[in-house]
Length: 157
Image (cartoon, rainbow, N blue to C red):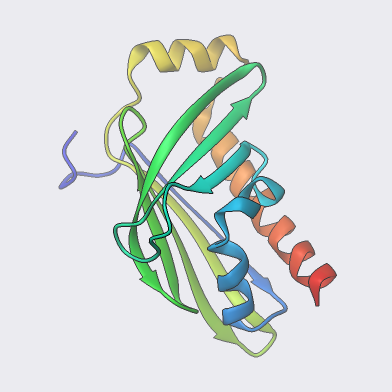
């Protein structure tokens, strides 16, 4: 499926976090803290000192006994507004965090889109790890990430 067609997976979750968008931005773009937020991420680190569009970071993830590494390239970097990155093959997914100031803090929207179906060997491994509905697992994980983001903001402030 090409990127001009409907995505194979397209998930969006939102949550109001009681903090200024810049505070939220600082937490989200500190990729070394992603394992504190995401239930699948074990570790993330910037590959070099570059930040902004084109910067890359490496992530290690785990789901049940299944673990894998990814390389992400930043595709949007608008401080206090948007942080987005694309994961290299075979995942080839796009992740976006948008931040909008609202009266109670910041409306954080996390989105993930994947245009191509996951390769059969990866789907088999996911099933062996107990995942029968990857979209539901991703949505639950994204919801947990935003809950943990809110907790992190509350405890750091």
